Length: 226
Picture 1: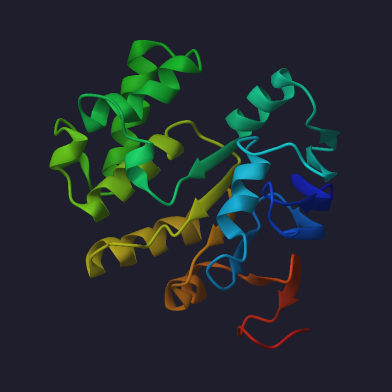
Picture 2: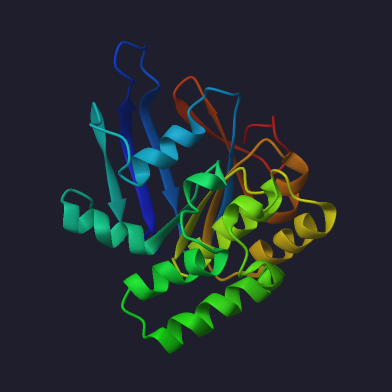
């Protein structure tokens, strides 16, 4: 089976800083659910930004989607339709007058009709149990509500791969359990960067540790390298 996403020989450093990634490799297959753990500053968020084309240039390496290297702006637009990215700070993703406006924004811009986009937005809001927040402005939401709202905006675009940066932060117990149920049963590939190992143990089947610029494959119990 061909990987959905490949990161090959990635080398990257912020200007004036030591090398952050050193020939880093990653392969994600369709419907695979994995996590990336690591210390603060290891580069988990940076890796997601590079995959999404939000950081560059690369010193070396390739981002490959469905067997094709991402090179041009057109390639990048295609990648961003296939790959949904939940930022660590949900306020960076919520910019419309109401939460519903944020969730319907993506489907409308993908070319869905108003009726189709409306149905899609409500479907996702109900799935996350936040339909009662639909007409509230983002500034009136709690941190956990904002995170779920930002995730709804991502899911409404129906990507094939989800990059989720600390998705469980700020959630109450009910929302935490519901998110686990959704991610376990959703028919998509998922990569989660998180320090919440209890959450990860309920969702993912493969673990990676980001350390010293490389990804190490771990067993399901963190710390035991296969």
